[in-house]
Structures are given as C-alpha cells and as structure tokens.
Length: 303
Image 1 (cartoon, one colour):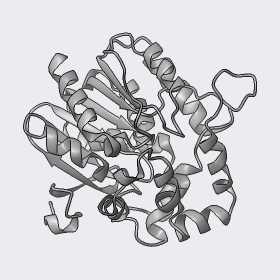
Image 2 (tube, one colour):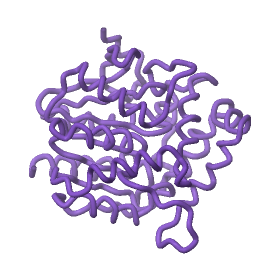
Image 3 (cartoon, rainbow, N blue to C red):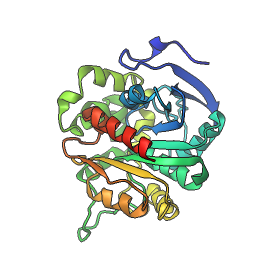
C-alpha cells in the first residue's frame, strides 16, 4: 500500500510505495510509464539519490527506485544479512514481485555491485546498463607493484572494521554522512543543507545506520574478502556481454577512481563512449545532475 507523500523529504516529489519480497518490507518509488528503468542506490544513500533523474525521465519511462533492505525506508531487521550477495538475491525477489522485464539498470556505488551481480544471472531480463561510479569485476587488492592501487578511501575506511570503533563512528556519530559524504564532493556547495537533510532523512538514530556500517566493512581490499569473490564471479559472467552500456563517471571520486573505467570498457564491447565528468566526484547525480540526465536520455533514445 502506498503511503502519503508527507513521509518523503519536501524536495523528493515522488510517492512512497511498499511491498514484501524475500520476507522483508521494501520501500520504493514507481513513477511514470513506459520502459522500466530500475535505479539502485549505494551506501550511505537511498532512493532519494535519484530524485533528479526521476523528475527528468518519468515523462517517458517507468522509473522504479527501491531502498535496499537495511537502507532508506525499507525494513531493517536487527540481525539481518546485509552482505552484498544476499542483497543481490533479495533484489531478484523484488524484481519478481513487481514482474519487471526489459529492464534498463541505472547503478551507483554498491548498488552497482548488487545490480551487476543480479544482471549477470538474469541477462534475459536486462535491456541496457547505465553505470555510474561503481565496480563490476575483481578489484585490485593492495599491491605496491600494481598499476592501479586500492583507493586511499578504502584504506582510510578500514579502521571502521574494528569492533566498537565502527559502531561508535558510523552508528553513533553518523560518520559516513557527516564526514565521508562531504569529502566525496568536488564542489561541496552542491551538497546543500536540503540535500544533507534529504539523504539523512531515514537515518536518524543508532539502529537506522546498522546496514551502513556492515556494508562499509565489506569494502574489498584482500582476496579473502567475500566481496572480492563476488566480483570475481560477476566479472567472469559479464565479460563480453553485448548488452548496450553507457558509462558515466565522476573523475574526482576518491573511492572509484578513473582507472576503473578501463575495467568497464573491457567487459562491455557494445557501449557508447564513456562520458567523463572532470568536475564531479562520487555523487555525480548531485554535482552534475543536468549532465547525467542529458546523457541518460540520449543513450536511451539511441539504443
């Protein structure tokens, strides 16, 4: 049953909806009609991340943007499994519950890891991929001799794995949204007071930020990390897939630096030229929403 609009921030002009999938209550927005665009957010965000894209695309497309379990306004079971493989399995149940087919995926951050793993196992349901600053295949582990090294942000966030410290910083002090998010913007003026309030809207209190902590602790640095194996499997399944792809990249991202573009271009031979945004960091839909929207509309019209 959809709830009233008043439960969303004032600058998020969408209607909340809820359904049960994989035994959990999901919150999502479902705006417009036409071909389905499925938009997956990352950490520590929620479907609010896509408000600009939804506003600019719902005239011609059906825009579906869920909150992954543990995030946003979706259910947050205290002892829930927030591993990225589990999230991909739950995503399959969500897609089935809505009966989505012919999907164009729009992916950012860990939403890309989850969405691309799901897509690798459900290729017949995917029409296109639009990739925004995320990973698709095996990450490069910390190796001083490698051409591409683990980003500094990976190592800076590693202490959050320490018991007690991570809980204090992320769940207690809201470290990811108060400190990490602003650092990922090139122009912090784009991270306005309204945007800060909007991103933080569902994350008020210790328990609300549990999935943020568990997810940031999964950042892959070593080959023994479970997400390393997940990406290894995903990359094998995706390589050479001729699905139409558009990569859009904020070039000053501290977590997903430009060398990762090479990885995307290697995996997907049927792609339009990558759109590089030199003035954007990690949250490119916030810093350059007009450029991202124009690129997405052009790509959808061409393919």
